[in-house]
Image (cartoon, rainbow, N blue to C red; front, side, top):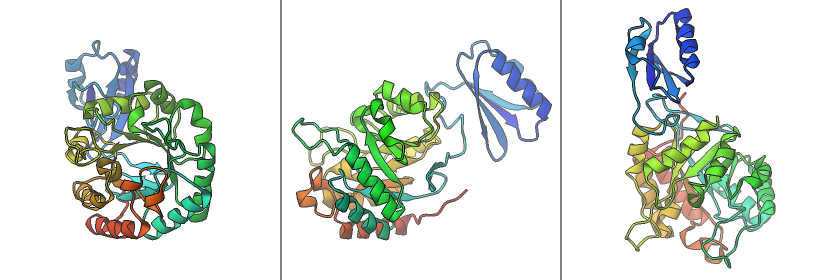
Length: 335
């Protein structure tokens, strides 16, 4: 349920309203817009008398929300959320590019790539320390050493870092990671999501390869219900009948999510297509469609990459892609 309070409300009446609602056993999520104040009621609202609330002088409107996700719902929070990742802002009119290798292979490799993508305008560095792979015989990542090398690259360039977590027992290793990524395969790892909800660390949640948008938003709800509202969504392609690309990039997810949630949306064109030649047009399309950012895989030697070399761009090609995307949507933080 959503209660819209008039902007010029009486403060005493407002506090009395909140106290009364809390006495009914519901939690209150407050969001202030340009012309009104929105109270989102989370929990069992069956005992809440809509007509009584609507009759109050300070109340403009009352609406029941049908969607099962509450905290992530734009009706609860009409204004775009701005997620601050160590000084890098996502949402509210910003546009950022996260770039780096699929997996961290060495300190020299990740530091070199970080320096090059920063020159091209990337505002964050990505790199996998733990890698979920289809085959148990594939490279699984360097683990804790990979995190250490990412931190070396952060120290050298100043770029905040993002890396993927596999299970909640790894959380202590991510203390200095600026943005924790939950991969597509873990989108419905609810125990992990609950643990991440207890942190206040920004989370990048990827859509599962066969999950609906509503299922993605319900996974977000697990994190936000724990009190962590610092969530960025990531569309990385879904599995369809098409085999010409690794996955099918759901461009329509951008406007749909923009309507349904206040959280920022990042697009990963690298995993969506799996072929480096297609990354540029998909990145430009996502940028034009209103994505809040991109996450692109960059490797200094894709042919010899230990993971996903076929979809990785060289730093030179990435520079061209970044210039084209920034021409469409220049980076600018709008408060």
